[in-house]
Length: 295
Image (cartoon, rainbow, N blue to C red; front, side):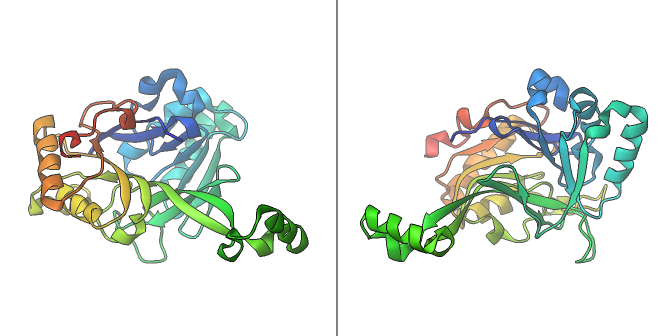
């Protein structure tokens, strides 16, 4: 299935990524509903990475327009106090939004969208917190299927059906998981292996090169540099890469030139897309990759 992914992601100002076919939103920065308009009504599941205001303030208008019994469901880092406060405020300010569900999540949880798709929260280190405190998350969207066990595959179809009837599916099939999409949220590159074997990776790349840019001095939270993201991707099995959350200090020429240069440096031969600062990008995967000339 080819997904329609649209986004706005500019460091300090606003970030959101919308997967239209799934009704899934990752982060909810300002301008979300004014960009999506009626499409925002498709949003059922909202996964917030952390409580920085550029990732959550779009929730106020989204909920005011689209609240209905049981939806949208807003998932947020378990120990972030901003979301219960926002839920309490909304109930007083917009009482009709009381049907919204607010759900704290943490690593180890599984959020099932349907019988074959599950979202898995993953801890990241954007916000400094003790190991048992969860204030910043990445997310993995995983496809789950049941497949015939390897030792049965070579048998004739009729024999397989007979064995399944006799022994039951639980004894003749095995669960196979495949990560269809990874969303980093804001994070340093701290555990590359978590993204291995991911079909589509959406990763932040706030800064292009300067070592002095990390950590972000304004909020003392940690971000990624473009080069470390590209180096990481070059060592992993990833099929498509979307980069965002660039600082406004960089223009399109700097960003695109750096991406192409790093693709050459690290031998990256997968499509690489980017969300430019200050721009809403529509149907990203249907646009030309930045590195199209190198593929």
